[in-house]
Every structure is written in structure tokens, then in C-alpha cells.
Length: 441
Image (cartoon, rainbow, N blue to C red; front, side, top):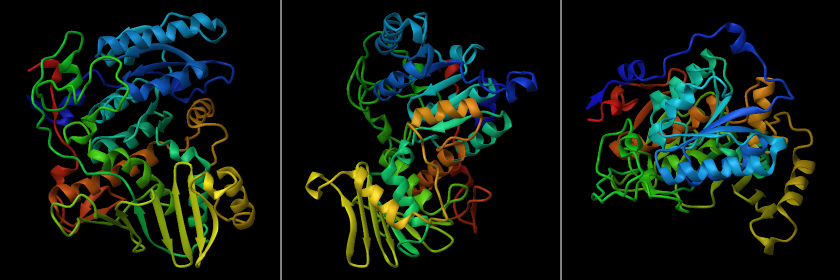
């Protein structure tokens, strides 16, 4: 059973709570510990949970898998039993995320569910007066990104996307070099990540008790259980639901959400995006799609270094823990492994000192870490480094690239209106309908 997005959002328990305007405008007192509810307790959430345990009071956890839910509950209560000065061991566990949304004592939620759930849970949290930390990619389609950008502002919330590469010095320095014209006009940026999504055709498997499969599938089309999508218990790998259109967008939305985000940052496009998207020449190719910007810079999906920027005067290559800066035919600074000598930190400091000391463009510099930035912004009510505009616009880039692969059509895009242009594209590609999982049909 399917229903329209609008009807679903009206029927679901995510309608705005009517709260006094003073609550929306209130600032978190610096000495108050934030209360956090966790939605989704799989592998990705474990590091997030460890981070928030000491930065706030985790009061609720939620997962549709009994083993993961109970493990998270025990971890939280064990932690506060050991460190009672940091919180109380009275965390509660839930199967349905709406029970966390309904709690008025929760300041923020941390969402680490599969992509097809992100927007529904984000919007529910925002409309109930909660700040949100949500894993990338922020959304499962373009319309969801538009909805989240609108509602963060409408309800006055603080929103951080888990695109933590922006909080790492190597990516900031690389983008500051690009933004200050140190390598001249950038002609192209090559981003390296895996395949686009594909339809899910996994065979049915017998399912052990302890998983609410209807809730796991949620708004996606119902299909038989597969352990590839939701491995039972405390597995230690990232499940492959992300490879299928129904639940994710392949590596284009997975790793692409990281590297295309850096391309957006380097080009100064956080409030905009490409104007044209081209598919690869071969309809079956899994590399070669391009995002083209108004200044004619191309962002190309292909295998390579991570993020590789080509300018008129030089190149910048950057990936996690790796940095390579070239002017002309001379390497200015390089750290790709220990054999390069020195350290990444020393190489970045040299570049900042020699090439960015008089920089006119200074990018957001996180003082501590990505989660700390979110918590600090909850207190100040300022926008964090990967706020809803950043997370949504980068997600839109991923979705546009996936559309080029999926339908093998050239697409014109209006980033100001977030709409197809020039008679290209299909309006139905912007969003998708949700299954009414509450009817369990």
C-alpha cells in the first residue's frame, strides 16, 4: 500500500507541536547538559553514542532489532553507573522512534538509521522542537532535502549532518587553497567513490524473532526479509542496504555524500549547486557522470585519489589523512603515507603559513570535533559547520548524479528553485511516495 508524501506526513505522528515562541527562541544554558535520544543503534551509531555519552545525557535509545536495542541500553546505563557525575543510569529503550519524538524532556536526537528513514525522522524531530544530528546522506531524495531546509528555519532548530570531513584540517586547508585562487580557476574536480544504486532483488530468508521487519522497511516498498539488508544482532560491518534504490543510493550517496560535499565547499556552492548533470557516454557505465556548474567547472565521478582539484596553476589532492598540493610542476606539500616524512599536521601548518597567511576567504574552522561543534551550536543557536543547507545541498548533488545514471539523460537544474530546468528531467524524480507502514499491509 502506497500513499502520497503529503498524505503520509499529515497522517504520521509528526505534526508540529504547538509550543510558545519563547521555547523556540530559548538558548541552552552553557552549564546545562543536553538530553539526547538515539534513533538507530547499528554499527554507525556506536561511535556516535560514545561521543554523546560524555557530551550530554543520553536518555533514550531506539532500534527495531531487539539485540541492538538492548545492547545500546546496557551500554548507556553501564556508562552512567560508572560515571554518575556525568548522568543518571535511567535510559529507556524503544522500538518505535515516535516514542522518542513524543518525549518533551529530550533536547536533541541523533539519527543513524538507513537513508530511507532519515527525512521522516528529521522532520518529526524538528517539528517537535528538537535539534538534530543526522548521519549522511541527509535524505533519500531531493524533495526531502527541500523539506528539511524549510523546516529547520521554520522551527528555529539547530541541525548538523554527519559529514565530518569538513571538521578535518586537511579538507579545510584544501578548500581554502581552492577558494583563494591559489591554484587558479578550477576547471574540474574528480571525486572517487563507488557505484550508483541498483534495484533490490535479494532472495527471501527465514527471519529469527526479535526484529520488527515492518518498521525496518517503514516507508519503503515492502519486500521479504534479507540479512543483507538488516543483519541480526551486533554485527561489525556496514550493511549493504545502502546499495539499493529502495533504501539508499549506492556509493554515490554513501561516499559521494562525503566527497561531493568537499567539492561543493571548494567551489563555494553551499547555498547553490550544479546547473547541468550529464550521464556517462555508456548507458551501463558506473563512472563518468558529471555535475557542471555555472562557471563551467566540472565535478566528475571517477576512480582516483579521493577529491582531486585541477586548477590553471596547479592541483590539490585530498582524502582522509592525505594531502597533496602542487603548483606548476612542483610539489609544495605532500603527505600520503609515512614515507613522505614529517606529519600531516606539519605539512598543513606550512601551507597555511606560506600560502594562506593573507587569505581573504576563511572557512569555518571547528575548534574541537564534529560533535562538539553541534553541542556548542545548540548553546549559541548558531549554524554548525554542516548545517541543513550544507547537508541538503550536498545530498541533492548525489541524487542528481544518481538520476543521470539511472535514467541516462542530461538534466538541466535550477539550484535557486531546486527544480529541473529547460524542459529536462521529470518532476516525479524529485520525490517519491511512502508506504503506509502503520497499516502493516
